[in-house]
Image (cartoon, rainbow, N blue to C red; front, side):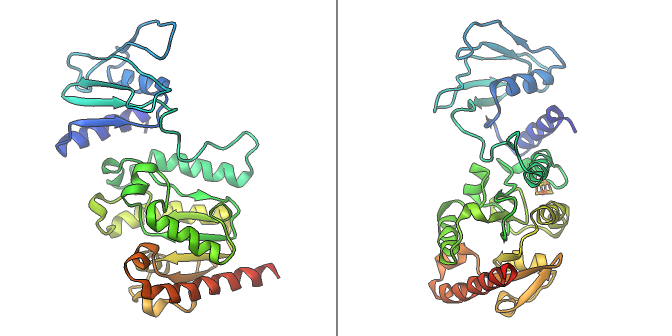
Length: 298
Ligand code: SF4
């Protein structure tokens, strides 16, 4: 589906949900102009300007009523770059310099694994396989080493992840970084990903049909990365990967398997923040993952 059509559908759904403010992040000025221009079936007008920092444009309404104008787009500012009203929407455009992409596009010298992960990332960005894309702010495809020996799998993006497009940021993410450091791994050496790539509204539990729609992305990511061990973070990730309803207490302390890859189950870092008594068992779990790594290297 074309990006213009995706954005048009997204706007319609947000409007039906009662929202009146739209923030377009991470699009370059040119992309925004191209996309909003497409709403009007080619009727968008861009006035020729010598300086792109102050670029008056005319944007047709998404419902094809009267065009509204955006006063200025400033790609190099840290405040919302432009505001306007489009058919009842308050629109805020932010330039690419203000909010850098969470994950840089693959470099020309990218490895085959990086290129494949980049392709999956792009598919996720335009995915409409389940309704979550319409209510989330950003997709969170996952990040880290494309050849990481260890992959951490969580449940779904939370509020901070949804805002940044990055997995495991905020307090839980900092704790995960410390847990990895305890087994001599940095975040950059592993790949961190969630089962679901878009945030369920209000952090509700993912629905089975959403998991099934999204699971192929995780499967493909793991097939590309080929880790030596997967650490499933929390009940949901563990139950999803292992296709079981057993509680986490019965899944910990053993080595399971997903796609032929050893899986170690442990508590989600957010749960550790609520219950410090789980830190000790978590330490034991990641030590188990470390031993699997070490034995695979021997
Ligand atoms: S959660 Fe997964 S399946 Fe649903 S829209 Fe996002 S990427 Fe697609």
